Length: 355
Image (cartoon, rainbow, N blue to C red):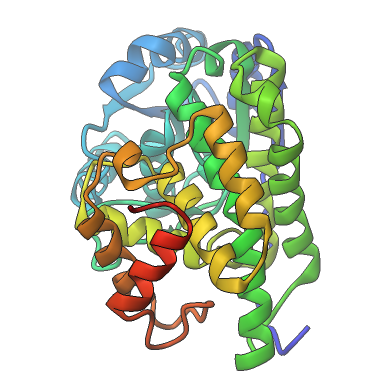
């Protein structure tokens, strides 16, 4: 609908999910490269190397000796440095092993080198698992940049289930945001004539509805619940591949989360900020669903107040007034001028986020 600009729909060619799925990485590597004459780079963090990176290294070593590329800060500068190291090592394949940061850096490195990327998530904290976008600090834009769609995703539920509960809840929070992002996309289509793809939108919405329906079993952290979460996160990532942008999965609730990161860096996980932003934006839309979302968040332990998030009332207010400036070309319910301080305070008080 609308007048879409031409875009390629590049989807992951293989998604392997389940108990013990990590062993399948050898099969994927064999399909992508020639073991005898190719080099593999494994992008991982210091902690995630111990949790899963060392296992991937062992499996890949049966084919070729991999180059271990440790990411510490997930900044654009560091990603560039890792790209240069990988280039000098003549790497033909990048494997990202870890949480969102390691996978994002891996996708960026693969994009820069023009080589395939395999995503091996160890935490279900957001939908970057299968998406063609990466969130790196140090860019001139505090939001995701377009990179490479992973060639394959290998989600070992045994490993992912060991992730801290806080990261599992963050994944739920990221999915809840689709209830707002799709509304914003439709709004931009109606008011600005922006391209709107209903299939991608419905796929993103489905992932949010899945999180709502199964929130208790997901939040319990049992493998079956974690699998439901991971499948929904992958579905959301695929919706972005189909749309050719992050529109179906990122709207005003993400702008709020990004603004909060600027105002109070390191205080909230991405999905926690998105979930709080979902309450706010649904309220602004006049959608009574915000109360149900807040109640579910309370029940499973996602922060619903500034105090629970560990930030001041002033920081939350400032983030909400700044949110519309994060990505001015992306039209949302916040409009072009955003909220005044008084309006922001009223919304936050009405939703119980601040006292």
